[in-house]
Length: 190
Image 1 (cartoon, rainbow, N blue to C red):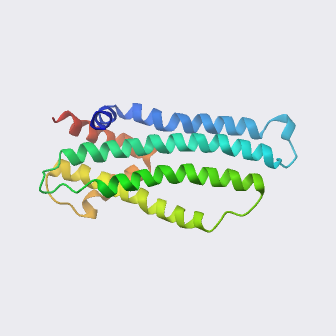
Image 2 (cartoon, helix red, strand yellow):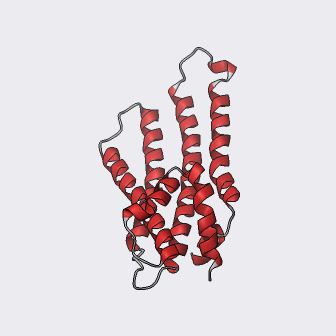
């Protein structure tokens, strides 16, 4: 795991940006082409075609989210290993939150497509799973940004101190240009 995290943390900002944004752009072009095909003009889409299109989009969503989470995990892992041992938070809940987030994206995609095909409503448990996944993603964002600042300062930090990287990671297409150079400097320190 450490080698993978070090590999990602040593990539340049443009490489991380391209890996995160290129699949989204390709998916949007594909989606626009699929929706605007001449056979579907002016007619409502049939359920089977919509389910198949949704299945393909969920695969891309899972890929992009996995890449995004890999970037966050590499930041958290590398930063955590460079924080003084007396300040270093445990990674147990961090990994549990990350694993749940990825699992949720896969399960939500399955539920969405399965219930779209059967034309039934989504069960209420999906709402609870979604809220828990939201909390888990925010925990991963907070852990990664807090460890990044603690590794730079080698001192305890408050949310005010790490809120900048937190929001930059949250809005990652823009934030990758500001956060990744800091991660590169941190990764260069061995």
